[in-house]
Amino acid sequence: MVNYRKRKRESSADASRDRVVIHSCSHSFITIKLKSFHTHVNKHTQMHSITTSPAFFKTAPSSSSFLSSFSGKRGGVSRRFRMESPTRVESSFSASSSSSSSSSSDYDMLQAMCEAVQLCAKLTSKTQKLLETSDQVSKSDDSPVTVADYAAQAVVSYVLEQKYPDVALLAEEDAKALRGGSKEAQGLLEKITEITNDCVFGDDVSEYLSREEVARLIDRGNHEGGSESTFFVLDPIDGTKGFINQRQYAIALGLCEKGKVVGGVLGCPNMPMTKIPENVDALETEKPGVIFAAYENFGCKYAAMDAKEPLGKDSFIATSDQFVKCGKDGARYMESWGDSIVADHAFTNALSEKVGITRKALRIDSQAKYGSLSRGDAHIYLRFPPKTYREKVWDHAAGAIIVSESGGVISDAAGVPLEFGKGRFLDINGGIVASSTPELHEQLLKAIADLR
Ligand code: AMP
Ligand code: MG
Image 1: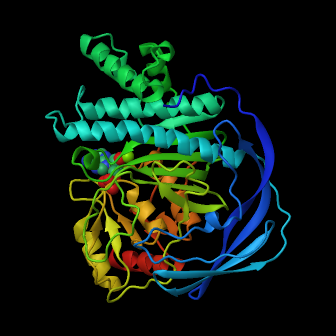
Image 2: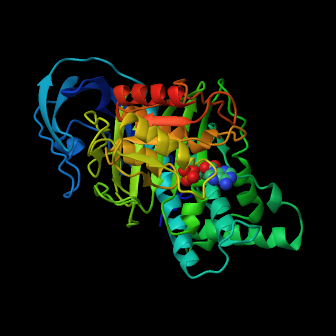
């Protein structure tokens, strides 16, 4: 059990590490450029900087044939990953010098975001298990789902505040309904406080937060966003319907700076670590799940949800499939289930037919779809809500950077990049499309324009 209150101020030491930049993509190779820069190592949590060690370029789990080989030395380097088939990757290494350096905070921040998401996943996994045998499965006032939503937000808010008290939080939930003073509201807050304390402090009751403190932690998420400040963006349980129905869901945490998403962590507590099999139209649930993490100009990595070092030796590089095309056995697209307001299966059917996709749609709840795209399980994410629907920043911030840092492309249906600096909502034209490659993306946008 992690006791955040008892943590001392982090001691730190400089250590050099490498920055991964998707440098260029073509059909024959992707070059990833690593720039050496400096960061602090958090000795207390034993979190080490990302290095050029072979572990950083660890191959994907056994059932995937993602292979990488490694040679080289510390410092600015350039890596070329030669793709031999859509699922097989070999990397060769050629050294070149780079002297770029950056401030220490970005890696530490991503690390703190991973910690918050991993802790939160323990809470949500426990609650989802309870739901299996519970009758109270609607998102009404005192259902376990509501309690889990609020408590998950309180846990993430707590961890982030301990480490970054000056960075604001923009999150889906607020504690208004919990402050009403009614018996129901008090009972609900009591339950949320209990679950939050259990998750963060375990049996150490001397550290327990009061109900008022928990409500304040939830309300820290009231930030209005915009393009001026730096803030975290959180959806504590994205894909509530998936959560209720024992399917996929995600804990989605982004970091915005000056209106731009610069970091993202996506916890998918039910996602298999292995690639989605070819001939399925839904994703099996499997523990412990997967955590994805991306930072601007750094790349995207993924690891088992319970990994000790999800950015370090326990992680794998996420690379979207850069060779995929439409046609027989080619691109596979993902969409929401039919119980989602953002699903338009008639339109996605028509679109896939128009571009020549022959494979069946893969239906996955939540931003887990962005994670699947980032590691090449599937290649397209199509989302077409009704015209009156307004997309929220917390439903896409983490996923958007995870897609772009793995080499994919994301925009609205008119090809305009998503703008995260306009407040709590996104202004989008006709839907959201994410694709493994720029070519695929262009093809889809053209087909959408033709169909409309
Ligand atoms: P997905 O799992 O792909 O359906 O996306 C989940 C997100 O879409 C949720 O977190 C909601 O923000 C939004 N969403 C889906 N269905 C609805 C609905 N019926 N009403 C409001 N928002 C919805
Ligand atoms: Mg959501």
